[in-house]
Length: 251
Image 1 (cartoon, rainbow, N blue to C red):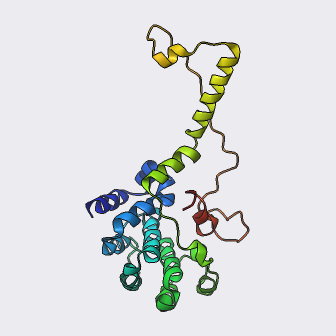
Image 2: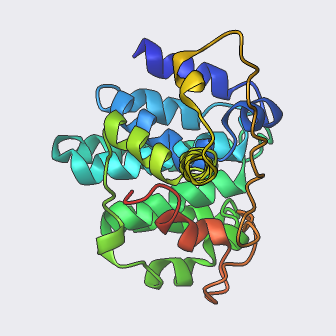
Image 3: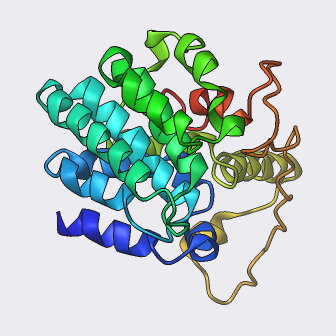
């Protein structure tokens, strides 16, 4: 519980701080840590969603974690549904509090409520719309949210172990695989021209260090912003469409 509280304390430091230290990890991977630490303290997750002056993308990983806890931990389903009922009532009761009312966060909450228990939470979702608390750019209108549901096969996501996450980084992140390929290419080129590189392996301090300037990583395609229109043609923002299917391979 202390670790989870510490994470939330860090996330309270503001968007500029968390973007600098977390970057895309905040929206792509942070939910996994919150999921694993939140299994024994679901109320703390809902309490964080009620915090004032916390930026949007520091809260949305919590809604992602709650969704996956619902799907993977059957014993937590009733308290999570109850927690969402209480949370929606809290948002409505405090709708005039600008430090709390973030319509993108509430839209994320509404989407999670729809995905996990639309029949049990439909009225609470509707009330959030009635009070104009749901960002239409994020979630669409009430009717489209109710009937434009992504297939259930995408709802329950794979929860990777720390080893699997590490292997994914090594195999897919820029700066790891490229370095390995560059080293292999340089070794082949040295072998072809007969350059003796044994001194490099033995660490001979009398020899100069043969530094090879690495080639800069070039992204093959322009990066899609979270708030850009999804390239799949759905008309939705990328963060509410295909972004959830990308990022961590297999998540």
